[in-house]
Image 1 (cartoon, helix red, strand yellow):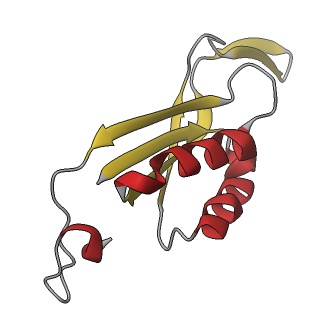
Image 2 (cartoon, helix red, strand yellow):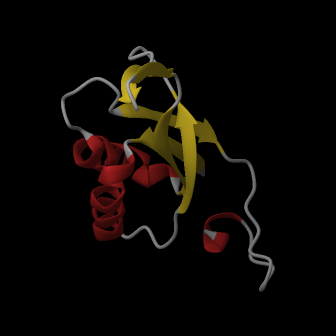
Length: 112
């Protein structure tokens, strides 16, 4: 099993959710986060004063998936989240050693 973590622009969240649902993913976890990468934030004007916004709003998506679906899901996330502009985000794939469904006690792929 693998854990896929994607950091994307918040307005692309619905597109990504629909894309992974078409593949058959039944559950995702979404967290509202703030951060920056190469874009380094931007400046805004508020009541005549200019200030720097270092941390930009992002959405963090986490999915636990079977090994055979990893490539298909990462491709779907990348295609759905892509705008072609800086700050589109990143996808991280890491090994998931164990998953347990609390209600039934199922483990491994059955728990996902």
